Length: 190
Image (cartoon, rainbow, N blue to C red; front, side, top):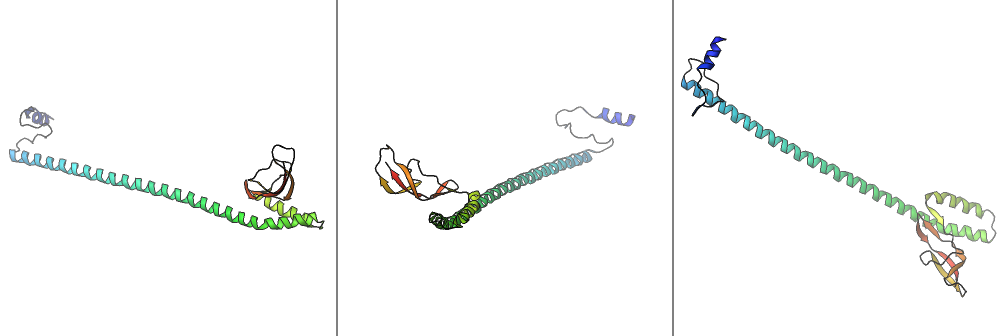
């Protein structure tokens, strides 16, 4: 222990030309060996700085890849939602086309019921029972004010009313999920 303390005690205080971060050369070491040790320390510091710079470059590259992955994931989610919306819209449109093709069958059933054909009311009830849950609804127009977006007036008779009113439905109108599928053909008074 006394050897060490004597080595440290013999080391001169930091001053001009003496670096504090250098280890003291072991006693009996030459100035060349001390210079060589200082060069090794400089190389080590340079190697550490190069490693830190490489580490920062790798971290920046990692962050770039992470941002790219997040962007690609967001783009994919947007695409998936858009594809799902498109598919839903296409299914809705195809279903609406099928319902439009069934409306004449409902008209035929309604005409058959009007002529007293037996069994036609059961067929019409079955068709309406199948289509109502999917979004089909018959318009209730009789006694209501005339609305050109929902009614097609084919007969008009004068009356005392200030606004035209539907007095008779000649052909039932239908809505499909809130929009008019086919306007009702009506007789209007007023």
